[in-house]
Image (cartoon, rainbow, N blue to C red; front, side, top):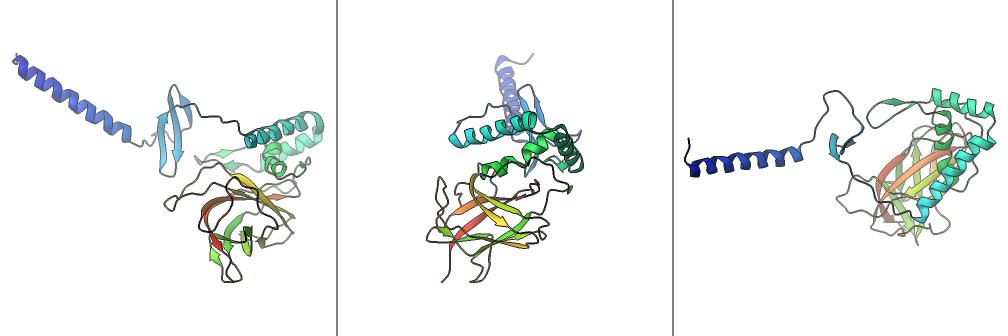
Amino acid sequence: MYPRSNRSARHRERQSSRTVFLAEVKKMKITPALGPMSGKLGGIVASRNRGGAFFRRKSVPVNPNSLRQQAVRSIMTGLVGYWGETLTPTQRDNWKTYADNTPYTDVLGQTITMTGQNAFIANNVARQQAGQAAVLNAPTIFDHGQTVAAINGDVAGGPVANALSINAGLLDDNQAVLAMPTDEAGDLLIYFGRPVSVGTNFYKGPYQFGLAIAVAAAAANVTVESLTTIDLTTALAVGQRRPVRMIMVYDDGRTSASYESIVDIIPLSE
């Protein structure tokens, strides 16, 4: 037997090693051996970010229930009502056909096929948020349409990549470049996040709707200008770095994938 003093010292050493080990485990980012994981199990949630997959403790998100959140929820409730009470069986079948032919890839790299109802709602939420009427007939072109590929500010003075130029508080002389010319007329919807610091390179949200710009068929670029001040919680100002999200909504009912970036707000050159 060890003397009591030695046994106590060995016990403290083991406890110290265990504490260090647990501290290191808390810092580990785990890559699941069984492939992509999502969802929760007990108090553990499988999640993912730019660094890869990881596990975190389950937490209950704060629900501020803001007026803007209430507006979006109201839109979704209205679209559910449209689906059940206004659309004909044929129209619902056509949305199912569109959904079956336009699967998308989620953040885990898995292919997801929506239901007809989900496709109808997903392709109309942004449209209604911009004050437009819902499109009841499903698209007959089985894709999500062309997306924005880049945004340039102060185009006439020499394009400034990843920037938006303003003049007296108004967006002026900017250009959104589309990945391909549009095959249908529609609108470019632009959303803004709150200003972020210089070191911020990733932004999850929230975004606030800013403005809609009409886009003609066969357009390769979209002039981004505002005739009036955009109603934002924090107004646009020179020197800001603002997250932006841009979505194309087409007159035939399609909604493109979103383009997201953090842009510099710059003055318009004279």
